[in-house]
Image (cartoon, rainbow, N blue to C red; front, side, top):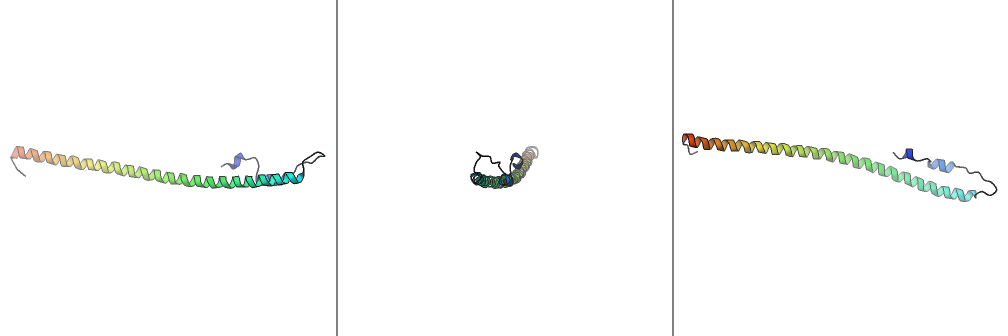
Length: 108
């Protein structure tokens, strides 16, 4: 993911050769500094890989939880609709019973 944003690899840094002129830098100091850069660069790459893996894992967990949430929400909606139907049926039965009492004079 981030690899395309880097200009150098650790191998590029390691293989880099500097031209030395009469007033140039000391090669040992340059090599020592580049060794430090390589170590840091390697550690950054390891951190990035670890974070990308963690990000993928968290994204997968998020998608699973989102799907589970949708299922639970649908189940709750279905259950509440079913409860409403039962309540309506009971209400209709009570009304019918009351109408029968009025019309037929029954006491059941």
